[in-house]
Image 1 (cartoon, rainbow, N blue to C red):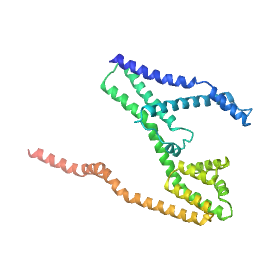
Image 2 (tube, helix red, strand yellow):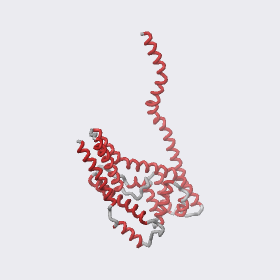
Image 3 (cartoon, rainbow, N blue to C red):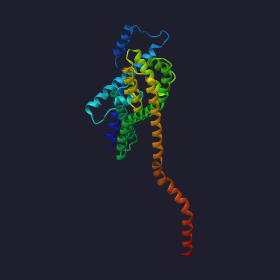
Image 4 (cartoon, rainbow, N blue to C red):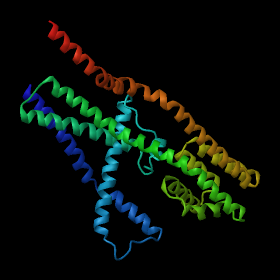
Length: 310
């Protein structure tokens, strides 16, 4: 059994090493083709830059991402029970350049690495037991689920921050639009004043507009990346006002008021839920300790008195 476990650990470690070596040794044909395309468009690197270091790091990242993409596609095809993350979840966490297939491959790498590490350590120490196998399975599952949990939690926190900052963005847009500026120019002006996730999304939408995309299409893309109720109402209001030729400043003012009202209602709802959430720690954590402090002296005196009588 020890020999079998050692062979399994070495096999898993060798698979991980083989994947990394194959990713590093990918030919530079694809990178050279991209550089040739960039030269055809008339862009050149800065003369004082360090192209060797940047190219090597970029080549390594591209090679690992390409191999992870292939592994992810293989896992999606032959293991349909292991569902990949959706592109919207990656966009919500600001992983714009990562594909669901590549993230699926990275999760497979993590699962294989942790399982192989446990098997190798168990084989080196000679401790072969059912606990080792259970630990291998548990760490493999943890390596598979941990990236997804981190990405989803980051996306949820980021979307909450976007909803929180959206009324302030609308206030700035109202001030600039009422001053006589167009909506597109207002977006460009306020993008430098907004920080955090919402500022990143606005600046990305402006870059899309610079590439020739219309305002409505850029806002629709921003809605796909940040699909929240507040962002949905904001984008729908802007696109409808632009298409109908209406003055959007009164609509935006009402929208900002409605968003703040809904935020207040959500805060009140959480406040009303707080006593229910505090019931469990109160009953099972605070009350037992309080009972011990209150009744232990009396119980001690009673037990001492009974022992003296006996």
